[in-house]
Amino acid sequence: MDRDRDDLVQRLLDHCALMCVTGDEGPIADAVEATYRGQGHPVARIGHSVVVGEPSGDRSLVVLVGHLDVVAPTDDDRDPRVESRPDGDVVVARGTSDMKAGNVVAMKLFEEAVDSPYDLALVLYAGEEGSADGNELRSVLAGVPWLGDAALAVVLEPTDGQVQLGCLGGLHATLTVHGRQAHSARPWHGENALTKAGAFLAAFHEREPLVIEVDGIEYRDVWSFTQASTTTGKNVIPGRLALNLNFRFAPSRGVDEATNELQRVVDRVARQTGADPIDVEVVDVSPPAPPRASDPMVAAFVRTAGAEVAAKQAWTDVARFAEIGVPALNYGPGRTDQAHQRGEFVEVDALVDAFERLGRFLSTAAG
Image (cartoon, rainbow, N blue to C red; front, side):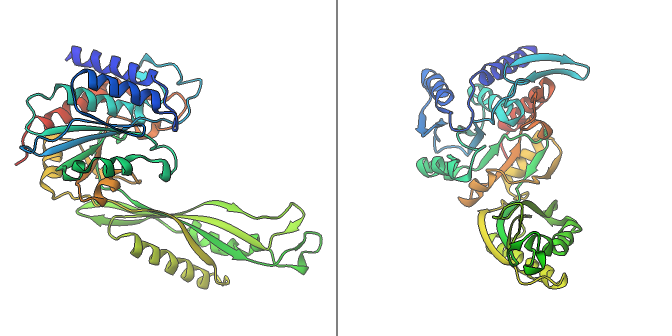
């Protein structure tokens, strides 16, 4: 046990020492590729992403998935280190919780799971922390088609040690409120699009999250305005206001249904608040992933890992696997409240616990 603990800590320190801000994952991908080629494993390289292993065809395939990139470091987490704190030791470094702790758990188990009843593969991909277009996972899944035959994908994002099933879908829409531009000294010559939107925005401010149950798992639909902009100067009454509305929706419906729902809700709220019709343009779409709690492999993971089960109240790349029909779940040692924080850290105990629980699943045949 102490040997595993020390090994996991050292692996995490080494993994975090390779700085890999989104867009600069080449060196860490090179290092991972060299390590596994040196160990004699089959390796596929797609961009700055690495796939290790391949199926034998005789056993069910389990894929362990993590991203290599991190957000920019701060002075508080640039240098990887172990710190002793009142609640136990932690590893401090950029990317510890999100999600290099998950990566090292996956890599150690992949290397040591010689008696696993499953074929195992590692997917360590680039571009997760940036724009959707730069996320290389979709290219990896297209470039290594046998990944689509996996019985289960375990995405080791930070989950606070919970098994978080499925994920929310997300829509970003630009809502345009129209007024009439004028000089701010003579506002009666125009119609202020900014203040005109007040009652409409207030109605969404009062809107409570809606709990939706899918497969016995509770998700929450939420509506958030995240940006507002006009195109005029400080002394001009704005004739146009552009708002970004982010609708996060439970995996009880798909993108088309959610898009129609967004339009209906905006129209209804506009009528109720006396607003003029508001233009709606959907500009970004992320499909949800169903929890698939009854899938035999998902159920086996939940049973053998013995961790608390919850919804993933966010979007993750389990949705990419859902698109190709592969059951997937979120499980990792990282703390969700540490993702992208200054002085990011993960508890050593959580690292060891995830290693043990995931190891139990990988050593036990489903059934």
